[in-house]
Length: 118
Image (cartoon, rainbow, N blue to C red; front, side, top):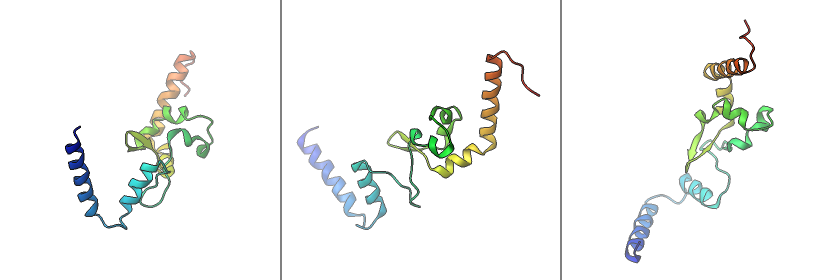
C-alpha cells in the first residue's frame, strides 16, 4: 500500500469517526476490542469464550459443550465465537439440544455394543 493510499484511508476513517458522537457506545466497544479487554453486549452481559464456560455448567472441559453443538448460539467477533451464559443455558434446555444428546447417546451405545434402551 502506498503512502498516498494509506493517508486516504486514514482520512476516510477519520471522517467516519467524526460523524459519530463521542458518547456513542460503539466507540467504547471498538476501543475494548482494540485493547483486548473483555467484551460485553449492549445489556452489559459479559461474553465468554467456549473454554471459559464449563465451570458455569458443572463440567470439567469445554469439549462436552462442543459435542452438544453450543457453537450454534455463539456470537462471532472477528471470527472468534463468544457466548452469553443465558443463550447457552437456553440452548442446553432446548428440544434441539435434547435431540443432539439422544443422537450422541445412540452412537455411544452402538459403539459399546449395547442395544438402545427402551
